[in-house]
Length: 320
Image (cartoon, rainbow, N blue to C red; front, side):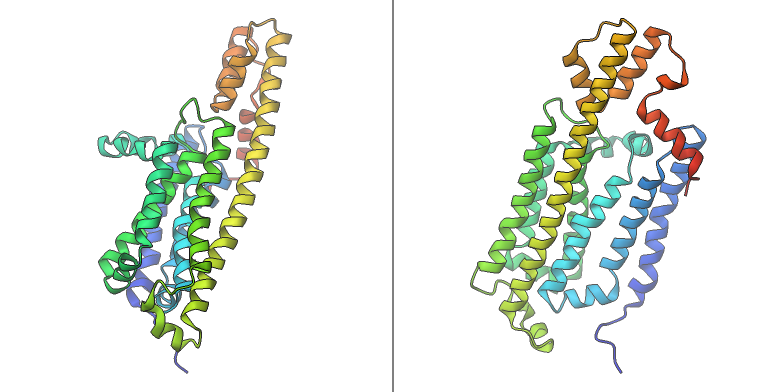
């Protein structure tokens, strides 16, 4: 019985090799940092490996072949590349991990793409430009253009996640309130397109009519399903991001109070607003370390939460 999809040798053999070549330098850098007592947390390494695996699935013959026949399959492919894989890859990164890359002049200049404003504007523009019917269907007819589309989805997807999650430093104005606005803006950009696909009332991509007929589905039903998939994925991501932000606010509040209590116990002068700014900028542990040095406190219980967590994780779980 013939398979309902094509099996391309280049994708079947070449993609795993490409994934392996992406993982090797990451793994070697993580091992080097572990020897320098700056280990990459295991969960981050798992995220990065998972991101590569998602890319492997998205570009595999079954998914990629179906994406040429059905809009809903193509939507799944794009969400896997631009949202899920890019998010997992970014979660796998740390500042020390990418430091050697940033020493390259060209790559260093690309840091501007991770500025929150630049990231969301460029990502949103790229997202809508590629979904213009003429350009979208041109990608389906030309492999090189299609590859460029997927590459920009991944690159700008990573940029927009880095604008929110790091690991590069954020502008001082990018507080938790700004992060909330950022998340809402990201989700609105995707939701608008999803609603256009569901409620547009016309078929925007007639290229899929042949594939729809093959799979016994109407072109409009295919388009509505694609928009529905996007809505569901956007909703789940939004809920997850809101939960993350809530936990982040709670964690920062706890850390800020712990720093202030430590300063008070050791009669150290520390303004509450300074502690709040340091914690919001992700530099609470640095501030705590400076306070500890001023107090001359080298006791184990004076370790920052990040130090204690990193040491416990390093003892409990070996590097991948």
